[in-house]
Figure 1 (cartoon, rainbow, N blue to C red):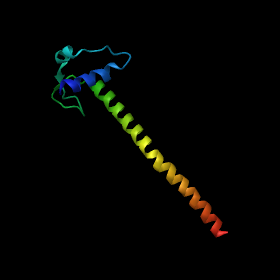
Figure 2: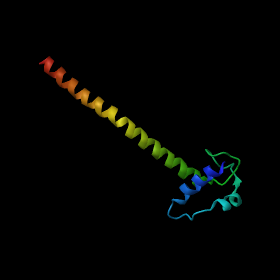
Figure 3: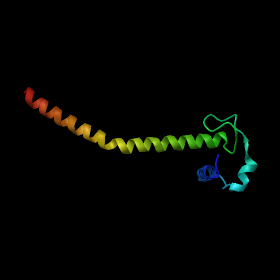
Figure 4: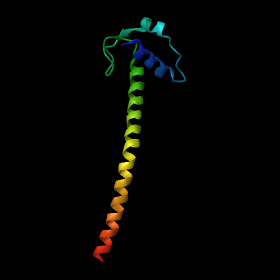
Length: 94
């Protein structure tokens, strides 16, 4: 991992109210073998299983919000046109 990536991980991880801020200088002291990780590289890393889970949950939440925001217009347009179609179709069948 590059230092910038580590800084981001530390900032995200330290955003938790119960977690102390960890400085970049301390990260190299915290390196552990990442065999226990599922997503992060399984080399030597500062990423714990807890950190990996939190980052995964945060990523999922951000992705879901992005999909929700970007698909909102398409959904509302579809619903609106669907209603108009139903009204027209009902009028024609009477």
